[in-house]
Length: 238
Ligand SMILES: [Zn+2]
Image (cartoon, rainbow, N blue to C red; front, side, top):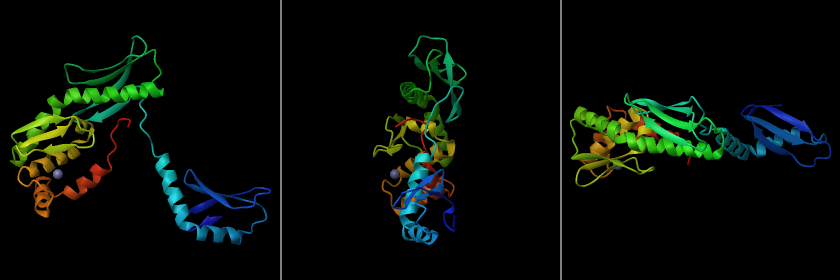
């Protein structure tokens, strides 16, 4: 069976089945019904339930989207570098992190542990956050000053915030707080968040004037960057 919108449909006939059921599997619409139901009726069923089938499809795709899963040898990008997840000879249940003297970043797990367990996955996620909290003052703050210098807008101070949802904040005392979580983002998005806060030094609200100033600081890319920011997934477990 074929549908103009949904493409190839997998039809399975089951003896004794009274109703028509539909579900999505690997983005293929699967219809189950008995031998007695004529094709015309199935086409009618699809037509009547088109909107429902669309929603079902969206939900199925969302569920199928790749989830965060850490593995050994994986490199997780972060601002100005990446983080390598690796095993070391150590006692079981160990998870640690390190920034070596050259600035290379590591997450270590014991070679006696299985990284695929839920507990270990959570431990790696936690270690990643700790590592970024430690690294942010040395990487994010200097970078923020670079951006400030480039744009010619200077705050009194940049400080690291611990918020997960709130990526940036500008106080009335002209202090800009930047979340350590920015460390996980690509440079252009980090720069965008910094520019947004720098624009707040002049205009505290989110008026059209604010956005036009922010857009100037972002080289005319404010809207595109905001869209990218909304679509960004942090490489940590919720
Ligand atoms: Zn704002």
